[in-house]
Length: 140
Image (cartoon, rainbow, N blue to C red; front, side, top):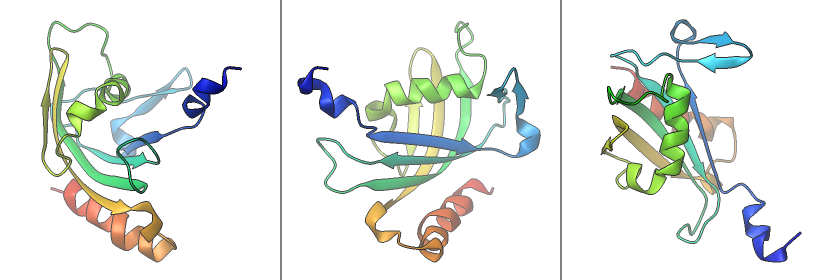
């Protein structure tokens, strides 16, 4: 075990998305969310630590207008796009309040609100500072 890489052992970012049950299904133990033209996902992103992070932050909101480029063969479900988003997170989340991202593989739009993780101390704070603002962005 190389001690120089201890910082890589700890999780620094975490993302999760939610979608109505009718929009996804399980296949061989994995979720499969098809890339439909009107796909909207409720998205949460947790930034726990990093060189540019003073305090842990939670982002929540909506991703929409999600599409893969026609020539891209390796993306067959939204879960693949989640991995691509994580790999390109600095570009995708340059402006979390108004996301408009496009590269040679995907394009998507979104809006996220943020709150300091230390400001969330109970279930009421979760609802008031994260869930309700995120749901208001998600609901058309």
